[in-house]
Length: 412
Image 1 (cartoon, helix red, strand yellow):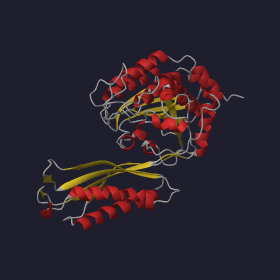
Image 2 (tube, rainbow, N blue to C red; image 1 turned 90 degrees about the vertical axis):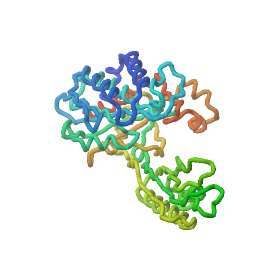
Image 3 (cartoon, rainbow, N blue to C red; image 1 turned 180 degrees about the horizontal axis):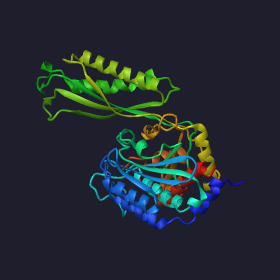
Image 4 (cartoon, rainbow, N blue to C red; image 1 turned 45 degrees about the vertical axis):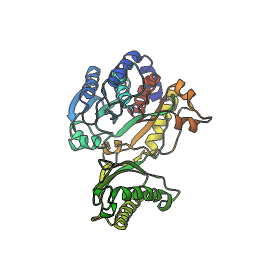
């Protein structure tokens, strides 16, 4: 027996303006904006909110926007989309590729905004079918990890009703048509670490008069690989990546400093703390062994929390998604090592559900090397790739997932 939420969702999304939403998406994709600079994107989204009859708010936490639709008694449901692009030169060859040099919607946030705009129109047009309050949020600066917290710090929940539940989703690689859910931990924490090694510079012909920070950095990079392999239990998931190493200006100059940028991925605070302690110990030890004149500088940058779905909330949404999108389309992939700042948007004690929408085009998926699902999954362009290009066939299903997820709470 089909639930009321699924039945209503199917009815009110049967005639979505798919062509118009695709055009909206293409326009957003052509005009990507970096974190904190999403002025045009925010303006386009708030126009859609206003056209659907939502009360609108702008400039929350910088470029954040919100729409509120009060529709009688009932719970308050918040739907969120992030809006920022990445400093990635696009290599998709699409007719609607980025027109901004070196900037691309390589993570699919343009699709998220399109889904939210579509959900705003669909839900507003069917107010007689549900009761409660909808809060829609266009969030800036997810990629830098500061946007959600900035909106909350700027009084988001003094400006809009405090939600009873929050829902969010993310476009992902994988054959289009699947909606992965995990009723618990779904995304990992991430921490950025910067290390500056202080040596003593000099002429390349007289290394004996210097303390070469490049050599020390090379030893440090190698030694850091043992943090996960030798200090973290095999049962604990963790990743340590040295994403950048910089030193020197010319062939024959031994520089004074070398800089390393690290990224940690963890799924528990304890593992994170142990990795940070190991990094401090190893960096200090390598600099001491090299005879560096001072200890290394170790600083911490972007920090994303773990994303942990409320199990009952996520199962409730997943059940409706299964009804609306078909048996076998919803499954539990387990937690991903990717990270999100979505939890920073969540008031204390409020449940949330966060899920994925797979989006790889059929031709790209079929052409990918490999004989099984995971081999192909690792071969197709992923988020942050210059070739990442979600299939436009996901426009309508992504609206349906938001609409049906909201109705799971607004049709009780």
